[in-house]
Image 1 (cartoon, rainbow, N blue to C red):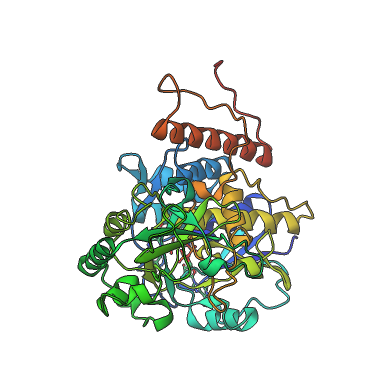
Image 2 (image 1 turned 90 degrees about the vertical axis):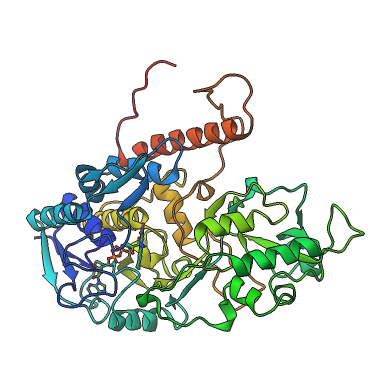
Length: 473
Ligand SMILES: Cc1cc2nc3c(=O)[nH]c(=O)nc-3n(C[C@H](O)[C@H](O)[C@H](O)COP(=O)(O)OP(=O)(O)OC[C@H]3O[C@@H](n4cnc5c(N)ncnc54)[C@H](O)[C@@H]3O)c2cc1C
């Protein structure tokens, strides 16, 4: 009899990982603490409980990155997607589900699988060493004793208990006729060029209006489970603005050491800086702009920043409790802890964000562990597929900042097109719904369609599924 894989946590990631490993023919023991011990957000003892919204977001596999991830997961025999599809409720282009029906279906499938046993117990430490294949999928609300054990194993600053995130912008939506590349005082620093930041200039009137908009903007109220205090090092931008009109100009928006390349003789009154966020250079984060403004307000207020009028956001800012590890330094490309082979992490604890992304990383971890148990080659998904794009973000695609020692640059993120490698030069874009030259939005849509077509073809090849037969074009 093959030794089992132990999976800790029966949420979105753990359930999917268990399913994938068992479907590959490997026995699984799934350890889930509910109902023995609850969390601040879960309300039932069902597996794969959706703790907040009931939406898996867009189901459009052609022009939406999470829709593409749905499609790839369906190709990979995902339990989460199968149960989501079976319990869909009407929600326009989104895939929303009946949460109770969905969770009950996942629980029933896992309980009925002949190779899976469920143990209802809290794991208070890391999996014992004699569990040679194990996956920790205990989520953003990992119970404290295990969280402490993980922190001890991975280093004191490896686990973030408090998550302050700043918005991230798609580079190709930033107006570089207004903004310019420059590091403060042209500092080259280790690994830099002196032109590592994108700078957005503001005059006094723009700055004053911006500060007012931040102070007046609607904020998200902290929920009861979000009682964690925040520290001065990561104050929300609107809290700084409330401390005085000049505070931001002496903080993240200081103009010193910067010369507007488009207008060198006029000193900007304030500057918003963006820093490259991923190795591909397709995403930039707004430096020091962690915020708890409501999402709609963030879009409205941040689009008043010169150069960001047409910005599209890969992620908006927020503040909430979140337990995740510093995966890029701790995990190898198959989600294994580098200094303990056989111990994998999956789900939101790895630094992905969202139900679907958590399940997708569970799917990969389950497959990797099963392949290893069966003595097969563990093959990572191609970077051009949503699976690979997401995995690369977690295990190494982000940029480590040299100028803010002590601060972490790795932040949880939903899947988005900024994580994909750009299309190969010369890729032919197809005019599906329109004719003539591609411009603006049409071009963006055509590029997304080419990216998703490439992703699905590469994902099929990775999974060993025959290419899709398409009608003659
Ligand atoms: C309050 C909140 C709201 C969110 N809302 C949304 C949303 O609306 N949409 C969205 O897409 N994402 C949302 N997320 C983010 C994220 O997608 C979900 O948290 C998602 O459930 C993560 O999947 P997971 O499998 O990693 O963790 P979970 O689904 O949380 O599963 C982890 C499981 O591990 C168990 N567990 C924890 N510790 C132990 C232990 N020591 N021993 C045994 N079992 C343990 C837990 O009981 C749980 O069942 C939210 C997160 C939080 C915290």
